[in-house]
Length: 258
Ligand SMILES: CC(=O)N[C@@H]([C@@H](O)[C@H](O)[C@H](O)CO)[C@@H](O)CC(=O)C(=O)O
Image 1 (spheres, rainbow, N blue to C red):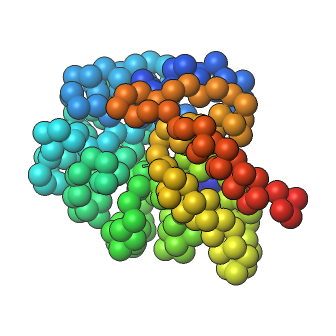
Image 2: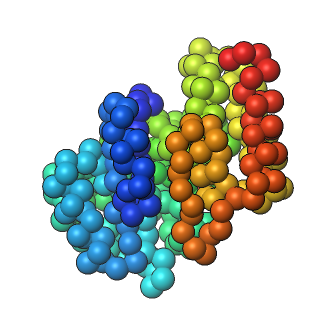
C-alpha cells in the first residue's frame, strides 16, 4: 500500500457481480469494506473477510445513529475490528457521505491500544489540515494514509500521504502514475500538469451531473467490462453523459500518446 502497490478496495455487497473479472488479474492487496449501519452485520462481514483471507478490512462510521465523539466512534470500530483480530484494520473517513466529521487526528490518539490491528486510514476528505496533523503526530508509527480525493492527491502527497484509493484510477490510472513519477523526481510542474487532467475531467463531469452511476458508466466504456447499473436511489448515467464523457476522456488521455 505505502509504495502505491496495486490495491483494490471495495464494498462486498456492491461488487459481487464483478468478482469474476477481478480474479482475472493479479492483485497484491484486497482490502474489503465491511462497514454497515448495523453493528452485527458489520461484524459478520468482518468475520467473513477474515475467513477468506482478506489483506485488510475497512469500516466507515455508522451514519444513521451517528457517533457524536471520538470515544463512541472508536467503541464501534473496536467491536468490528475485534471480530477479525488478525486482519489489518483501516478506518474509512468519508465525512461528506457519512456526516460524521470527527477529526481523524483525534481518533488516532491512542488508537493502537484500543484496536491493535489498526493499520491506517482511507482519508476521503478535503480537510488537508486534519490529514497533515495525523501524519505529523504519528511519524513514529507505520500507518498508511490512503488519500481518497483524487483531484487533490498531489497536495496530499506533499504533506505525506503514502497511498491512494479512488475511482478515477480506474480510467485515469496511467496519468496518475505519471504524476507519481513526476512527484518522485521531483518535477512539480509536470506533476501538476497530470493532476490538472484529473481535475479537468471531473470538472467537466460534475457540470453534467457526476456521481457513482456515472463512474460506473465511464469504467464500463473504458474497460469493456459491464459494471452493471447502480442501486436505487441512484439511476444509470444518460446516453448523453456517456457520449460527452467519452469524448472528453479521449481528448485528455490521447493527445500526446501517453
Ligand atoms: C465519493 C467518492 O466516490 N469518492 C471517491 C473518489 O475517488 C472520487 O470519486 C473522486 O475523487 C472524484 O471526486 C473515493 O474516495 C471513494 C472510493 O473510491 C470508494 O469508496 O470506493
